[in-house]
Length: 520
Image (cartoon, rainbow, N blue to C red; front, side):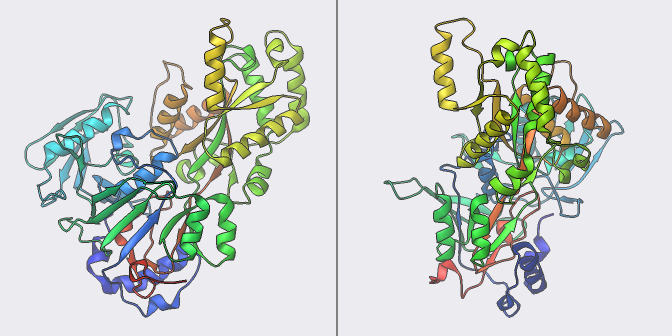
C-alpha cells in the first residue's frame, strides 16, 4: 500500500489530512483546512534509544529497542508487499504474486523501473539475495529462494507457508542490497546522508536523511529528516512543547501530562507486552513438573494485573491474559486472568510443605528483570508485592547482579549456578503473522520441546499458545500501546495501528515548522 496517489495528487490530501490528524492525534486543527499540503522543511524526530541499527538482519526479534530501528528503516527500505489498515494486501516492490495449491511455492513479479538510492536498478537477483539472508536465520522452514529470469522471484519452502504475505508485509522483511563494505542500499523514500555521533555529556547522536529523488513512489514532502538519539523521555516532552521537535516518543507516565497540556498524542494498538517466565529450575523442579506448574498457577492467581494497568501504569496499559494481543489473534478474549489471592495462598502452602519443591521454596525466588528501564523495575516490584501477599517470597535481581551471582556461585558449588526462577520480560510484537510471533518468542525463551511443530492453522495456533501459557511457564502481565507526541506543524500523520510509521507522507505546516524557526 504505498501512498503514491496521495503524494502525487496533493489536492486530494487536503481533506485526508484534516480527517487523519483529527482521528489519529485526538484533536482538530482548523488551520489545516486552509493550508494546502506542500514540500519543504525538516522533520525532527527524537528517540530514547542511544543507537540505531539499520541492518534488519541484526535486529533481535521481540526486543523493544529494535522497534526504533525498524521505524527509521521503513523510511529507507521497502517490502515486497504491504498491508493496509483494512487488512488488504497491497503491492509494494512486487506488483502481483501467486502460489501453488500446497502454499509451498510462491512467485512474485517485481515492479518495473525501481531504483536504489544510488540510481542502480533493482533486480530479481538482489531481491532473492536479501530474502535468502533474512529467511536463513529466522524461519523454521528453510526457504530456498531463487531468482527467475526477468523480474520474477520464486520462493520454495519445504512445508506450507499460507501466512507468507503477513510475514513479508511486516517485521524486518525489507529488501536491500548489501555493498562490499557491508552498508545497505534501499529503494525507500529517504537515504542516510549523514551520521554525527554523540559528543560530550549533553549532545546526542544524530542521523540526517535526505529525500530519495529516485524513489518509484514519489518524493517525500519534507526536505530532510533528522533523527536525534538518546534523548531522555522528559526532555523529549520539553522539546515538543518548545517546538524543537516534531515527533517524539512518550513514555506511559508522561502521556497524561502531555494530554493535559493539549499536546497532540497518537497511540498504536497494544504492541508491547510485559510478562513473567517461570524457568525450568523454579522451585527446584524439572521442566514440565507439577512443582513448576503449581508455582505458575499460584503466581498467576496472585498477580493483580488490573491494578498494574490502571494505577501503576496510569491507565495507559491493559491487563494481559494471552501472549498474542486481540488485534493480532482475534481470540485473546477467551483467555482468563483471574486474581484469587486465597487460592494462590493454598497452592503456595502446598509448594512450601510438599516434597520435591519444598526446600527451594523456603528461600526467596529470584526475579531477574530482563526488560530495561524504570517501568520494568516498577512492574517487577509490583510482582514481588503480589507474590508475597500469596505467601511466595520473591527477590528482585538485575541482569548484572544475576550474572555476577551466577559467575561467583558456579565456582563454589555444582548447584549454585542455577538460573533465577523468574524472569520479567518485555516483548515488542513485530510480525503480522501469529505463527511468526509464536515462533519468535518460543525460540527466544526456549519454551517449546524439540518435537513441537510450527503451523499457521488457526486452531493449532490457538492450541499452541494455550500450551505456551499453561505448560511452558509464561505469564502475561500487561500489554500497552506506543505513544507518539506530534508537533503543532505535523500534518498527515497516518501511522498503522500496529505501530509502523509513514514518514514520507508527513508534511509540515510552514507557519509552525521547526525548519522555519517556530518559537513557543
